[in-house]
Image (cartoon, rainbow, N blue to C red; front, top):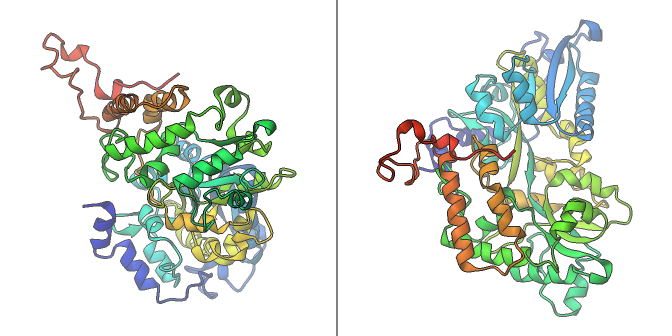
Length: 484
């Protein structure tokens, strides 16, 4: 049974509670003042001096600009709170924060966490489930949060953390190089709806059109990684893993994936239209894009603010190109309440975080797509008059988002198969069917002992090597070592 279907069938599951709450007001706002001070202590009618207020810690991660946006949220809350003062704590990444907690650091009362780190947080019992806390505060989110994001942060028939931000992969375009009006005049295939994105024929035409030898501009660049491959493989009818719920291997060697790779590699290996190894050694695709010398590349919302600061750069976004169906991948961030913290006060602050007013500074900063779709579809996020013109493509991409399995040993997986995946893209030779078949089979085989610790390859089995003693055989987890 798939994870989605299993969750839907559980009594009291996330979806059922969402639907039950959907009959409430759709505006997530702080509760009315409670003279008793519990659970809504921040709404006490008697203001206290800041030095006499309880301190509530809020942990976030991201760049300095992202942290600054969160500080605005905190400042706005502190300005109206009467019995609590929120203090912001920050880390560069979610993984860095969780690592500190693993090493004994005290968890913030309320904190952001990436979906990749959720399992560790729940298993370590560092969070408090949220359904009861939100229901007590009449918070409705059934119609305002994509079902996949609710499922992503649900375990044991309860919502463990609140979805907060979404980062779907989209296609960034330099609109001076990718000019659909001029392409149409030349009777080249162009997309009818910019929000829907391009099919592979239109994408190929746009790559060729954006390639300008006189300007030393290339049409397209793709990161040679599993993450960058995933949207294309899914669109072509394949999948990244053999099973998205309980993967035991990558699935690059499937018929659908090999066919998609053949199409994609034909574009990616063309030195006339894509960035060469020499060019990539000088600058990243983002930097070439900022210089006006790259037509298209894939990215998420986090790079939008920086691109807006580049003089004379005209850019837009579209949904990821489609080989078959429309699909993309991405990441999700949630907000958790610490099991060892001030649960009621943290729940009050959470209500503010997910309200329209609470989301406003973060949405305006432009680094993430709010998980609250009512905010994401408002002008606070879309920001008419600013680039990208088709910011609605981020919301359309959320509707086509397919979250991939969280792999416990993802760094080991990337280290193990990364060089082979990169070699597929950097070869300058024509794409050959036999080459793809051999390379993808090898990649899948290397991934097996990483994703399935019980797997023993035929060459390691006693039957295949009778003289080999158990002590001389490498364990499955040692069969692939990280690159230096």
